[in-house]
Length: 203
Image (cartoon, rainbow, N blue to C red; front, top):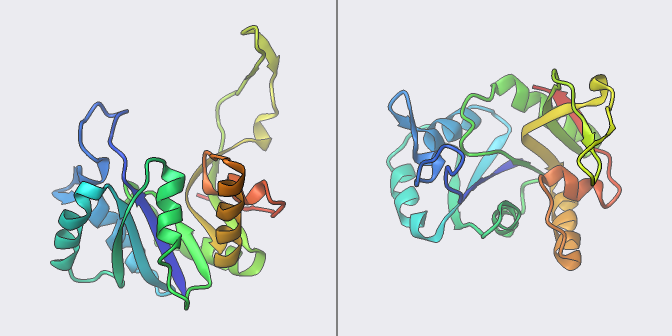
């Protein structure tokens, strides 16, 4: 079974909105709800875990309880960092789950086919991410503000979500990160640092 953890405890600071972005509407529905409905259409998905801010737990439970078509779900309190929200979600993942996906709750336009391909890759390889090829030229900066290097564009990918992992691998990666006080920029970075290979699924 596949469990999907949704970190949704942040606010839309980049949008200059003092509101959790998952509650912003798209065509009349909160993005959170649209995202959950999309993911629920994937047959392998048996569980949704939504990590939200402490003050939002009751409201989100009320919202989801009125909606049909969702996979079984539970709401947990998120953390001060995205990584901590995912850790809280992992703590309640069902024993029956063997794969965990992590998906941004404010990304409702993910295609079902992409999710299914990611699950296939994770079953075969243990870890995978959705990403798109980088189209821009990227520079690596030196400490003095000059250009240190220009990596070949064909080696660069913009990482998206969902990201998927064997449950035991993701739990171990988070445990090791906690021990080392390591805060990663995404879930794959935690898995990479303990030596596991992460495979790319084109988004």
